[in-house]
Image 1 (tube, one colour):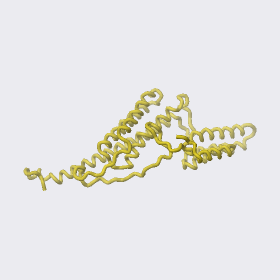
Image 2 (tube, one colour):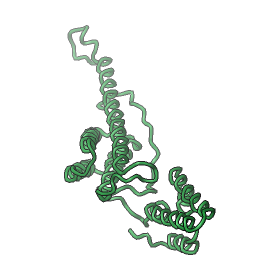
Image 3 (cartoon, helix red, strand yellow):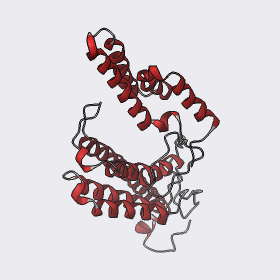
Image 4 (tube, helix red, strand yellow):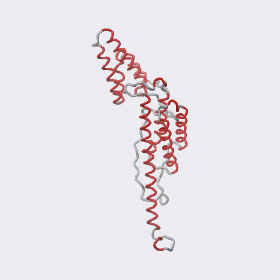
Length: 273
């Protein structure tokens, strides 16, 4: 969707009016977004711009222009933080919107009865399981097509993450957990975070993947770290979902032992109380 809104136009107009001070724009963006990394980066640009006036000759001018140029480029790269799109809806394989609403997790206690005695009210995924599985297939295919461009072991990490998430989706579709927080986190990782990371890396020209960024890391290092974080989250979702499944089985077993356990001792009858 378009970024053309009255609020965004006003912000851009302010930037144009105060263009000589654009070296401080990244700092302002970071403060508005409450992002510590962006704030730190903005402080560096601002400090270089201020110190440039104390340098003799043309070196001061060059330093000031460099700070302004870098700040302008980074401000454009961070545009989603200060001039977001209007009414953008995430699509299959598209990255999540920076200001997507986060639903608070809903804690659900394990029922004191087996599912067949008094079934709990179950909620299904907001998106069909087939859509989520399709999203994982899309990510796997994209990674396979660009395997030669990915750093070592990252392709394997992507496949392991997709396989683990697909197992969670299959379990959730067969037996919904009725946990809105869990379902939202699962959908976010599958439909937003994982495609976002992969697409973002592949958008970088191959000749620049080893260039150091202001945070000291190369795009290759960023990809390895972010995929590691997503794999860890997939492992957490997998463990959480299947531990609940094991707990449900134990609850069923307790019910069966209480209801029919006496048949093992009596040896006759229908086991009805």
